[in-house]
Amino acid sequence: MKKSLSLLAAVAAASTLFLASSPALAHTDEVLNQQKAPNGGQLRMAGTYHYELVVAKDSKEAKDNTVRVYVTDHDGKKIATNAANGTATILAGKTKVTATLTPDGDNRLKGTAKYASVPDMKVIVSITFPGKTAEQARFTPLADAKDR
Image 1 (cartoon, one colour):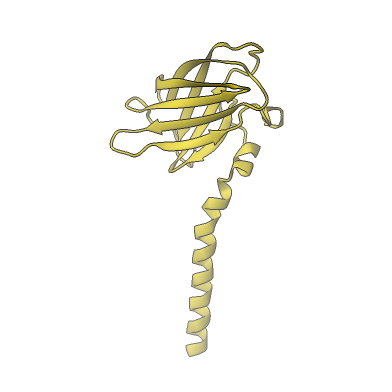
Image 2: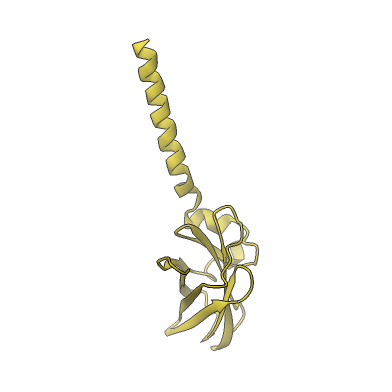
């Protein structure tokens, strides 16, 4: 009896560890890069949210381009962004610009910045919801866009 209780406890502990680690593994950048984003952008995890960043993909010269960020939960359900705000800091070549993100639909924030679509572009998105701390995500939206 004592032996079966020990075995049961060990199985329960192992199950708990497995279940606790699975969500973390499922949301790595590598795994999210393999998922087809609903709006053609790049997905990243930011706290309890998924952010999908959509940038101009064919702007050879730096000009005013739109930046959109879609917000969902980990199950893909839309998160209302009507009271949220944020920024998208874009590093494209030797240029660093910031787009102010404002609500633009159910689960979308939108901004504009002067940038060129370069393969090594990096973007840091920070979004704040009322009463919560800002959540950030880092993107390389054009580095592997052909693979998505």
